[in-house]
Image 1 (cartoon, one colour):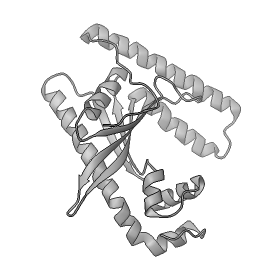
Image 2 (cartoon, one colour):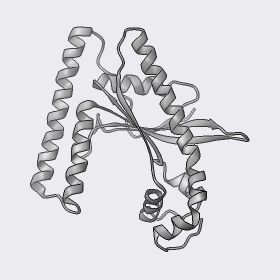
Image 3 (cartoon, rainbow, N blue to C red):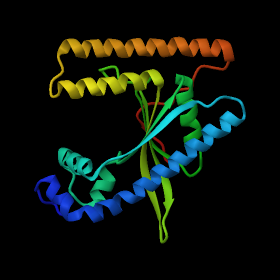
Length: 227
């Protein structure tokens, strides 16, 4: 892929076949993580403990999105640099019922021997200034091709239904008012995020009162783990 500064559509037109091949292993990595989560959900439901996962949404960045981000962060347009510096090409959003479910699913996924936890960012424990809450995990999963094994990074975002509701509508509001959201709306969005967090806390307490169980164990935020 060239290092040129031409328009993204020109680069895409010239290198679409190579880009699609580059993205193929990320699609396979998403499929591997999706399968693991499906197995966990079905097993837990079969045992009668309840399925902690409400729904799963995989996401693969488009070639145009990858190239736009590369230029935004000053990443050279080579496949090696794209692979090393853009770590969210493949993403999985996992929506759970309760905060405790978020940490339960994260622990079940990352303790599997073929899933390497690279980085944790806990925006539930430490929300972003705008009120955004979610647990972000960067994991690597082996994908076995016909002639080699590729370790594929996948960003897994875990959140509750309330967190997902807020994040989805916040995104739509920002998109509608782009490029500048009025300060009053920003304050209202932050207040709404705090309201959603209080609802999560209330539902968690009710859930524990009815079903028992300890409070969720939260992993340390912003840390790397190597195996």
